[in-house]
Image (cartoon, rainbow, N blue to C red; front, top):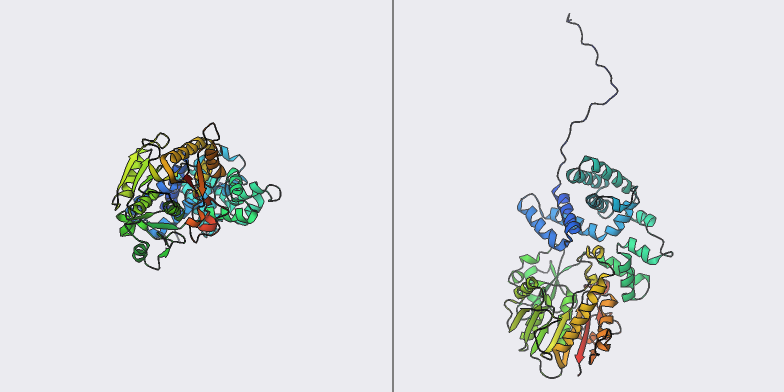
Length: 486
C-alpha cells in the first residue's frame, strides 16, 4: 500500500466540459446544389445553364460519380419546382415573415424541405445533412435556426403540411392550387383560362409542370434519321417520338452528348412540340412557288435547322434571322452542314432588311413569357410577373405584322410561341388581323393547323393549335398558320 497521500477529489461545478470544436464537413452534392440555387437567385441564372458546368467541374475532381450527379440534379430541380409549396411550409415554422429571412438561409431550408417532403432520403439524414450544409455556408448560429425549422417540418409528411397551409379549394380554388402545385396564383389563373374546363384538367396540367421532362432528340432532316438515332442509343435507352417523325425520346439517364450524330450537329436536343411547329409550317399548302423560306426569330436554331433541312429537300433556301449576335452564332452552329442553301443574319425582325413579299413561308417564333416550358425552366414561374406580358405584347404584334408583310400573297406565315397564355397567342393574332391598336388590318386567312399534325389528339376546335404537357407530353407550344390573301 502506498504511503503517498491521495489526491483530493475534483470539485463539482455542475457544468459539462465543453465539446471540442468540430470543423463542418462539406458534402459536395449538397454544396453544389446550394451553389446552383444561389446562382439562380442572385444572378437570375437558369438552372439548365448553371448546373451542367458545375457538374462537369465536380466530376473532373474525381470524387463525384453519376449517382452524385443525379442526386444534385434532383435536389436543384425538385427544390425549384416545389419552391412555392416549401415556402408555405417554412413560413408556418418560423416566427417572422419570409422576406425577413436571408435568401441563403431560405435556400438551405428549401433544400432541406425537399429532402424531407419530396424524396425518400431518411428524415435523420435529411436534417443532419442540411444542418451540416448550413454550418459550412451560413455559420454555427444560423445552422441552429435551420436545425430548429427542419425538425418542425419533419414532424409531418407533405400531404399533412399541404392540408395545413393551403387554403380550402372551396374557399379559394386558385390559391389552393397555387400552394398545392407550387405555381404563382396569377399563372394558375392564366393557365386555367387558356385550358378551360374544370378542376381535373388544370390539376393534371400543373402536375405535369412539376414532372421531369423527357430528353427528346431531333434527327435533322437531310442530315440524320430517327432510325439512326434509335440504333445509336439502343432499344433499351430510346423510344420513337410520340408525334414527330424526326423525334427520339431518351430513357432517364441517357446522355445526348455521347451520340455521334449529336456531336457532329446532324441531330440535336429539341422538344417534340418545337419539332411539330416546324413540320406543320413546312407542310402547310402554299399557292404558287415554294422557293424562299424565312425564320424571323431563329435563335437558338432548333427550328431553323429543321426548316433548313426540309427546305433543302424541296430545292428551297432558308434565311435565318436573329436579332442578338450571340444567338445568331448559335443558329450558324445548328445549321452548319445543312445539305442545301441557307443564310444566317443578325437583324431585327421588327425593322427587317428584306423587301415585303419576299418569302413563300415565314416562321415567327416570338419572344414570350416562356410559360409553356415551366417543366424545363421551373425557376421562370417565380421570376415572371403578370405585368411582364405587357412588355412582350407590342413586340409580338410587331413581329407578326412584319412576318405577314414579308410573305407574298398566297404564302404562309406560322406564328408560334412557347406559351399558352391567351394574351400571347390567339389575342395577338386576332389583334393583328383586325388592325387593333391603330394599325391597318391585314388581309390574311386562317389555315386549319390540325390536319398538319397527323395523329396528335386533343387539338381543340382549331384552326390554331395549342399543345399541352399533360395531354401531349410536350412543352405548351402554340401555333397559328395564316395565308396572305392580298
